[in-house]
Image (cartoon, rainbow, N blue to C red; front, side, top):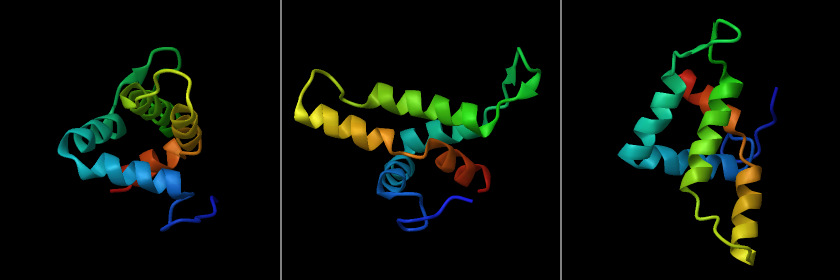
Length: 96
């Protein structure tokens, strides 16, 4: 079991990403779309699991992030995003 350390989330970064994803209609709909994805993994013949959905969410958010160039702010943002527990966000919304 994961120890919760910030507002019942793994850490501040996970809480913050979830907050912002659920705060706007467009990002909330995309999160719901990823959580509800029923696509079948062609190699395993099974529905997508939470880990795979978490990877999808992570890559989608990273595509939105302004991570251009090498500078202090890019390094700090990348570090914060590396701390996000993406699977926890998926699992939390699967239980909604």
